[in-house]
Structure formats: structure tokens, C-alpha cells
Image 1 (tube, rainbow, N blue to C red):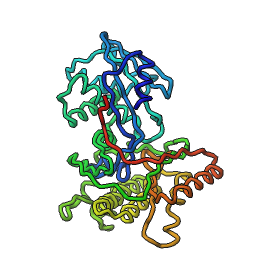
Image 2 (cartoon, one colour; image 1 turned 90 degrees about the horizontal axis):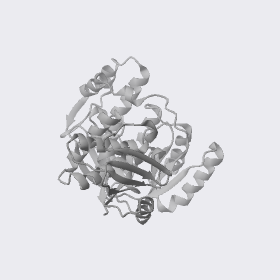
Image 3 (cartoon, one colour; image 1 turned 180 degrees about the horizontal axis):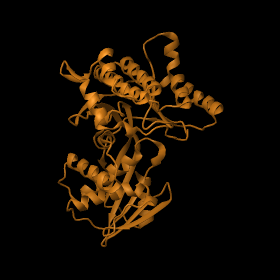
Image 4 (cartoon, helix red, strand yellow; image 1 turned 180 degrees about the vertical axis):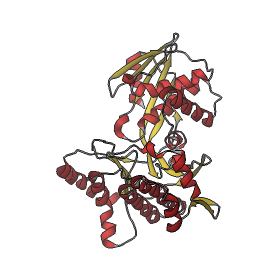
Length: 388
């Protein structure tokens, strides 16, 4: 926080009027199913993004990101998407939504401070967007509720960035609480907080540094036809909406999908939702082995059916799982690809005593694959927070 304040004061020679922080995020399970109104489990982690603002007496907008050594400019009257503005565009998208919602906004000097860069894959871009929304609310529309704030973020995405809002990302950035994870039902936008506080364990994020090359575009799966097919498979069991687990019924419904690759991916969505429910129950009861088992099985589905993993990621995940596999004991560790996939990031939950062994495996990984991975020991963290 102090470094963020110092960066702002050094750049603009003024004390910020507001300072907000938001966490990075991990999607633990289900993040590829939100379009189908399914369930996800996510948590914020303590890799914070800080956003500070000093108001100006004119309409000029200045943006500064010290870690990138980048400065961008705009104005209230000429707020446009510019490809070269990259990270600043997400801030402008939120401001655009505020202005279109008849909020009286002034010029600003804005600083974004984050040691983790937006391309790392830990939700940093969303964290910047959520922090900007919180700061704009504090300055220009303090009566806005959190839900109204999220609606404005969504409006900015659709009208300014021309993108779909990943609500699991936004909810995690805004609503996270320390020692919990968010169980989000995207059918009704309800959020349930589950305890996530296992003594003697550590959460490790690993950026495998594999260049991300998309083999297929996930958005091609987001069609009304596919949503209707999956909807036909949903049933209510003990008051919980889930997918029918009858192989006969699943095969009959999915036979309408002629492309085998897409049929496999939809099957992955179906099967992982049961793992999401199993993980929910395990977390609610403090059952780490049950949670870890669901996470490990989820990675297998994403690797074999959803086709978004890669050999480098699979190697890291296997090193975490192999001790339990060889001994046949209940799961004591778990690891899984997280985020968009096609390389880059995993999260791992292991016993503290295994951290040095994990570091040694990453050294071995570097020798085998030639990529120098980045590793972060993290903790769960609170969501959108005003610090000044």
C-alpha cells in the first residue's frame, strides 16, 4: 500500500483522494460453465491491485502503471476505446458506464499499482476494473449498491469493450472474504460463502510461463442451442439443480451434437458440475481430502475432454498428485489448471512440509521444458476494499 501511495505522489505530486484494493483470483472449479447458468467456486488471493485517484479541476484523464512504466491520456469528453491503451481501456469502460448513467464525473489522475501484470492469468485485469468501479462510486455515486456497481461494470464491458462479462471474475473481485471461497450459482446470481481454512496447508499459484496458444475458442461453445441441450439434462435432486447422471440419457441428448470435439467439451461441463457440488459439500464439512479429490478429477476432465491443458501444465500437476496416487491414501494435495488454459497457470494446495519438495520439482521442470516458472505462495483475501 505504501509503495502504491508513493508511486501516485511521485507521478502527480499530490495525495490521492481515494485508494482501493482488490485481490487477484483463483477459479477453483467450474469456471467454464457459467454461460450455462451453472455453479462455480472461486476465491480472492493476496496479490493485490491498488488503484488511487486524485480528482482534477478539468476534464483530463491521466493513467499511470509504474510496473509497466506506461502512461495513458484521455478526457471525459473524448472517452474512446484505443487498442494501444490496453489496461487503461478497462478503467475507461467503467467510467463510460458511469457517464452514460448520468453520473457527474470530473477529470482524474489515476495510478494502477500491481506487482503481478495483467497477462499473468490471475484475474488482474478484472481486479483493475473492480477497483476503478469502487473508486468511481466513492467519488461520484456513493449511494450505489454492490449489485448496481456490478451492473455498471457489465454495461461498460458490453457497450465500450464489446465483450462478455465473466461474472465469476467480477463477483470474486468484489465479494471475496478471507478464509472463504465463493460458491456462485449463476442461475440466480446467489453467492454462498464456504470455509476455506485448512491448517498446515498452503496455496501456491504457479505461472508455468508456457506461451499461451489457443487451440480452440471457448466462446464457440456459448450458443443457445448448446445451452438448451444442457438444460434438457438438468434435474432437481434434494432441492439442488444438477445434471442427470444417467449415461444413457446424456448420450441420447448429446447425440444431437455432431462435432465430436464439442460433444466432449459439453460432457466435461456436465461431469465437472458434479465435482463442483461434491467440492461444495466437502468444503462445508471441512473435508480436505474430498475437496482435493474433486479438484484433481476436475483437472483430468479439463485435460482429456475440454482440451485446454498442455504437457507442461500436466507435468506440474502430476508431480503434486503422484505421492497420493502411489500410496493409495486419501488425497493430501491437489493441483489443477486455472483460468483460460492453453498453458500458463495452475493452483496447488499442499501441506507446508511439501513446499521445498514442490520448489525442487519446479527446478526439474525448468530443466526438462526450458521455461522458468514463477511461483507465489498466497492466502485467501478480502474483495474490494477502500483504504483511503
